[in-house]
Length: 63
Image (cartoon, rainbow, N blue to C red; front, side, top):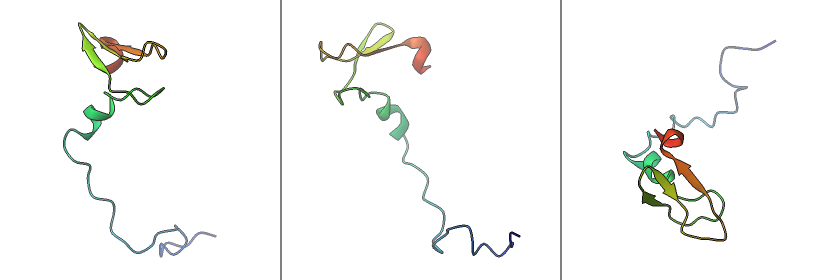
């Protein structure tokens, strides 16, 4: 039976995490998930400059 005292929720007594900084999510989109290179803008795409990787996002993927 689950109690409502919060003892079993795994909490450490700390407050909730602080909110993320402004712009942190948009910068995460600019890192290639395959190789970690910084993606570059080209028209309506974000493209990995590492030719061996070949990763890209089209505008429909990140809008």
